[in-house]
Length: 196
Image (cartoon, rainbow, N blue to C red; front, side, top):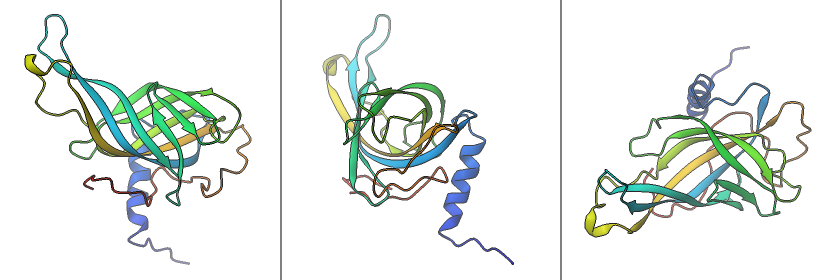
């Protein structure tokens, strides 16, 4: 039997190959469990540091999380943290980063996850990959002595691939969030003024 890839499958295969050998690949023993789409902003403040010119400094993300059906299932914010609508969540610590292949996009990341909050959908997450980023970089200019203290919010989108330990019982993801079998999925989420 001959297998043919459809045009829709090609981007998924390309993303799989890109993530597998990338510095943001999940650690051994972690398996992909679900992918959530994030849409929101990356927040930056214009700050001055001793001996340097004023520059945009990252403060925090502020985003909504969506399942594969485009339903809001949680939020992503300072910490960085991810919280499901059931109250479960985790905080992340950056372990690796790689430049995004998209111009003007924030980097791809690998983060270790530490559970926070009650048991629930996000309780077993052990690592997370931020991939398929669009936008979110700090402005190229506009931060100077006259604007120190200014804050900007830069629109961004990303996919977060949530991983669980291979030995952990994965159970059934929340309704509408099928187990993930690859690093990139397309989601139907509101555009909110972002350019693809």
